[in-house]
Image (tube, rainbow, N blue to C red; front, side, top):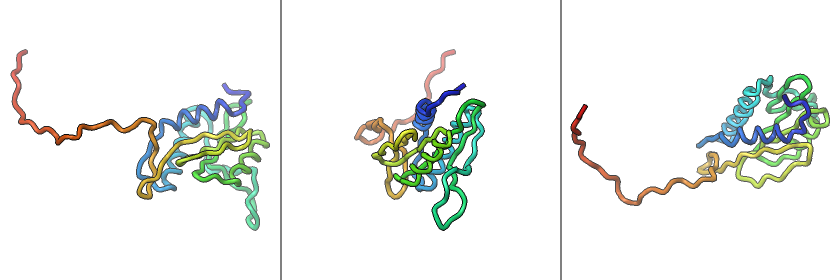
Length: 168
């Protein structure tokens, strides 16, 4: 059980989980939703209570009233700080400010950034998890560090099917 968590191990765990996530031919909104869904699955796999669009301690900008919302919030077992997670493709100062406010309120603050990078690090105690993705033809897809396999340059081989002898 995580009782004293500065967020490093939690962020590392989420990063490992998101490395397994892959998608192709998604709009920006669809890719963001897929990543948020994967974050929820990660938290649920740890048996944490998961809240999407949970209230934040950070106020909305004027002239709006009330508080902002978090993409994902997680309640953990007694003694472990809640986790506040934001998912963004863009580098937004408002997101940093919101997560700093969440950290000041005693939550583990994690910023999931996705896209082509670079991903400038936010100030501590905000932790960053990244998922590299590229845009091709207006659609987003995950980027693999492994190159595509090489294929032979020749034409496909077509052979006649023949029945093989059977010896029981």
